[in-house]
Image (cartoon, rainbow over all chains, first blue to last red; front, side):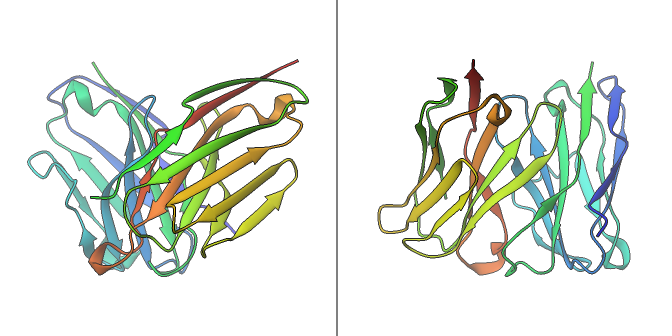
Amino acid sequence: EAGVAQSPRYKIIEKRQSVAFWCNPISGHATLYWYQQILGQGPKLLIQFQNNGVVDDSQLPKDRFSAERLKGVDSTLKIQPAKLEDSAVYLCASSWTPMNTEAFFGQGTRLTVV
Amino acid sequence: ELKVEQNPLFLSMQEGKNYTIYCNYSTTSDRLYWYRQDPGKSLESLFVLLSNGAVKQEGRLMASLDTKARLSTLHITAAVHDLSATYFCAVGDAGGTSYGKLTFGQGTILTVHP
């Protein structure tokens, strides 16, 4: 079974620029998550989708971050404008449902804001 | 708010020795996960623990869960160099609309020396 696909793998941008990340979950997985992992820390949930609806976005900085999951499959996460503190790895994960026991993580996108 | 604490945060071991990583969490949960992360890589699921007293073993790693004490342990037996990585515990949100959300510990950086 193919895993969670993310692109790009790496991105370097200047502060105040915008950037977008893409995620393709495992086929059939209804639940999709975006996590932010700052260097030296554990991942932190930014947003959780169930199909194409948002379940939890309480920790998403909505003044600059946005995410969508069109048609309940692929998802994009956007940052506009980026700040230095947004430098992190952005991990996408998916599971069959929230009740399912396991989420599978993609390789992540490493963002560096200079 | 669910908080997850791991200790130690850094662990330097000699090959052949045994050690335990501890994971404490602050509120009731019915799911606990252990993940491994190699440098520059994504998260690899090691164990899923779903009930009080659950114990799972894979090779030199054994994980257990005590839901009453809100404590999980990851025991390493006769460490080998290949186990060098960062280990995270993650606790599942117990209910409401955030079911599925994982709260991660800070991670334990394990280095195994010859």
